[in-house]
Amino acid sequence: MMTTEGKTDLYPWGTSRRFNSYADYFRKRFGGRLQKVSIDAGFTCPNRDGTKGLGGCSFCNNNAFNPSYCNPSKTITRQINEGIAFLERRYRDNMGYLAYFQAYSNTYADAAKLHDYYYEALAHPAICGLVIGTRPDCIDYEKIDLLRKISADHFVSVEYGVESCYDRTLERINRKHTFGDSVMAIKLTAEAGIHTGAHFILGLPGETRGEMMDEAGIISSLPLDSVKLHQLQIIKGTGMEKEYLSDPGLFNLFGFEEYVGFLVEFLSRLRPGIVIERFTGEAPPRMVAVRTWNGIRSDRVSAIVEKRMEELNTWQGKKWMSE
Image (tube, rainbow, N blue to C red; front, top):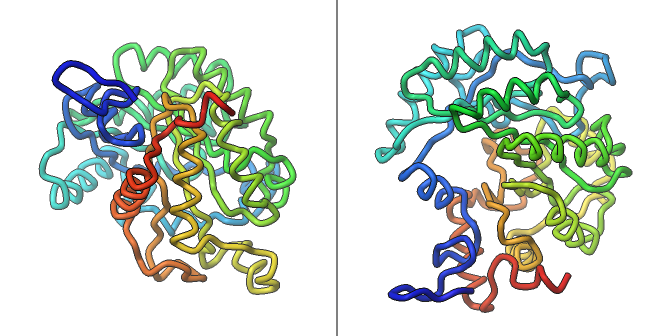
């Protein structure tokens, strides 16, 4: 924690919040809120189309998070227009929008096709950058070069679905890539000067709470700019739902209070320079097969976590240097 003249209780990221928040990151960089407009450009994944496997990851059902306006039958421009109209009804203070290529693996095509998709989005007058969700085994030097060139004039963030730091877990959930693949992709992207993010699921079957906590140190060692943390949810229509119904005892899902306590400790061990995009995932109630929480929204979770951190006099990175 730092103190400057006229301001007290400033943390290393320059605000009085006890974690390095995504919203504050954009306010500092752009002067206000930037909202993501989700796009489904019709990509698939290598473990869905047979290249590496079929059926996809055992936890995944894109219908659980894809907004209703997202449909690959619509042009990217039309999805952006409909998405902005949707978001303007909910948020009134947006400075601009980021085109969020969200569904499936959004670098899983040749670089020429990606060029056309990305630049169609950037041609929209309200779009000031790209957020690209993908897998670590769907990136290469040619695609990184494309993204590096785009990032010279626009904000570009690549979000890798890492999910776990443990190969046995990745095999169990049918990821069809290794943690080593994730490390290589993250380093390649960061070295190109591109904002690099990663997604992790907390509570995957077979992992102890101690192993999950140890991931804070592993994540801190990577050249990541941001992370998304997500409690495991059992989503209808997935392989994991079948696994759960077959043997619920294999799972140890987080209760809400336990998850809050876990996050507070996890954040204290996480490098303070990493921006926290979110703490939870939100799927429509109709898509959730196992209800462990009572519909607590992600913004409310963030407030509760921060309040608990205040009560315990802790903050992101407090224990990081001692790890």
